[in-house]
Length: 417
Image 1 (cartoon, rainbow, N blue to C red):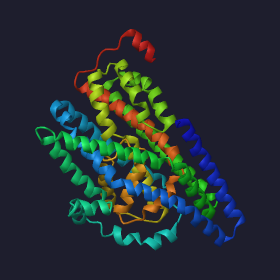
Image 2: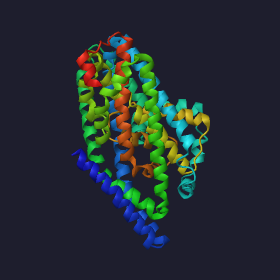
Image 3: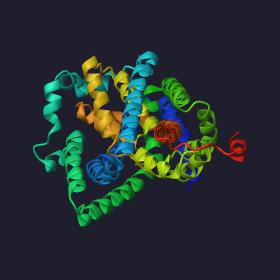
Image 4: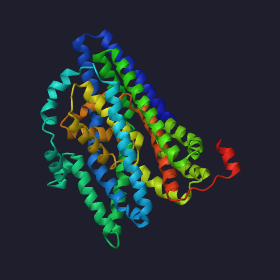
């Protein structure tokens, strides 16, 4: 199924480029614009479907996740160290994405002026102040926040609800069970929506190239290569951190996670590699009880590749539309991404939902995400593999800090070589 879906994605990309090129070459300017508008209807429906699931998805998954964080509190010391590593790794991922996108400037020179002018983004971003940010954190009504897809307000309310459930003596089992069931339902709905991704990718690429021409492919190539270069830099940083803490054991660690990382890359799903990581990490001495504790938290709160992409892709979209953020606004954006990315981790194409919510929060059209939709699957493969690497390193580091890193037996060392 995953292979078939990957082939559908590739076919949709190729067909979208061909149809867009045909419209650009054989239709006049008005005809190409009309064709792009008609194709854009498919993309608009897909984006509306994503927008439809944002509020219930964030609320249910985050409440369920926070309610189960009581386990980390019970373990205490291990939980604190684990979350400390996650926060540090998340900050590094987000900041690296921001620095590299400024250095590489993948969206520079695209000048999508018409869209930028029509939406008047400057009026909203200039008003984005510290006071406004803090005030906006607290919803006056959760129903109003959900109706408007105010993602940060939903996150704040979810944190309160999840913490309250965890603090109750009986953990409100019926409420928690209901929330978990709702989260499973929303995950299934998300899966249904994402099955339409090939159709949306075809329409997004075709409509973009119909109006912009094949020159747009050069911009996409710069964007994709720039992201993979940034991701490679993050891998180097992760290996460096692992080597500093684990010593030569880091080499064995990266050796055994090659297969899970490759599986995640080929399926564009870090969840597909989860069972393999659980089985693989003990081979390099990470005790299973540490793996069983850290990995579930990591898959909820430590998706390094996804966070790197959120920063890189969001800034690429803003560069392409000529939107400039101040340093203060960019710092706020990092904080926003740090929080919102924790609410929907593990969701298929979660990064698209996070990026769309970020654009909406800044008062920018969520339709701008169509710019990256066409190549999202190519990038999802890389960020899924990065998520696997980041969580594997986290488990090994926490095990080392806790003295839970066992010696590798000679036969196991030979197997990992």
